[in-house]
Image 1 (tube, helix red, strand yellow):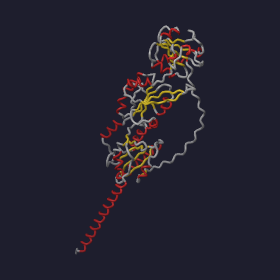
Image 2 (cartoon, rainbow, N blue to C red):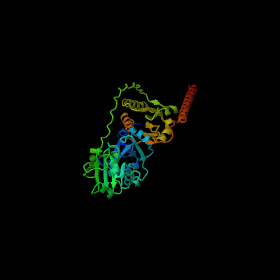
Image 3 (cartoon, rainbow, N blue to C red):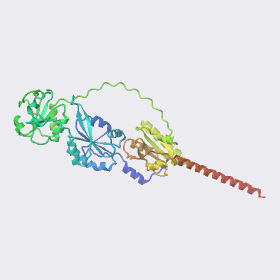
Image 4 (tube, rainbow, N blue to C red):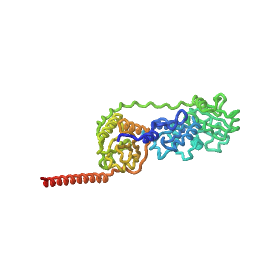
Length: 454
């Protein structure tokens, strides 16, 4: 049936269309990343990162956008806010490995540093369980920033991690420059915590609160920030000439530039050993142009056994006049997918055997040809609505593989209606037998009638 209902086409266009990112970089500081960037960027960043796992069709994800964007703007430069589209096929391994079971899911990743080499770290994740509003997200993210700041006090016995000013000056690691902030604020600022985390292993950070310590260091006003070069370590005190005061604005970019100037250099990426010449690609299996007809349950079960495979399953009427034309269309689409080195497997099943599949996948009943894309290992599918033509079907395949079409879940396993198919075949055979008997009786009657004629 090579026509399309206008309403169905309109619904398809509204639902699938080109993939639209939820976060427009022109209006939001949220960065939409890919699976590759998850590993190369998020996992290797020394900063805290909040990541939203979303699907474009998800209503709760769409409602989250303004809150997530406001939280990202509020913590811009201090905590990275990212998002990843789990509808994109290439992103789905990351979504699966991170335990995504519903949308949206929000996780925060913070660095856990190596005790021997503090410039090395691995990212640890924690899932957000609060109310999905900007204020809640900001508070949660700031509370998750690890505190890498030494607290300086006039009474070090009050805390196991506190030091006196002279203890900090004389810290045994002579090669590590230090930065110290004199402040009268009761709580450490998010900016200073973020800086200490980002430069951990390259610069020691300390915070001295109150007038008593400020007077010991001859500090006249708050806030005052000094950098103590590595050569200053080991001294019982620090002369005014050995401390480098910061007199710029306490804004992230200005402060980062000043600290970067005096910090140890970031660890250089070790050059990778020259990789051996890649082995020649194994010769591809020649294209089999035929479309497999499924006739047993085993055929269906073995169609897409691996997660990396997507299957195109067509439901056809083998008695229809355009049946061969429909197979030609599928062969042409299969050839184009082969040229793209696609991962699709192709098959078709007669309509009478596919009634339960049609019901499970919410396909058009008794309207052939019909087709759907399946991922049986993930229990996902996408039904096709459109003209059954090579160009339309091929575009449908590409959009689904690239995450530009919405997919749906289904429960249970797909089954062929083998008994129903046999029943219809038997009824068809019985009908043919009855017709044959009628014809034979008619012929006999005609012959007997002729004997009575003169």
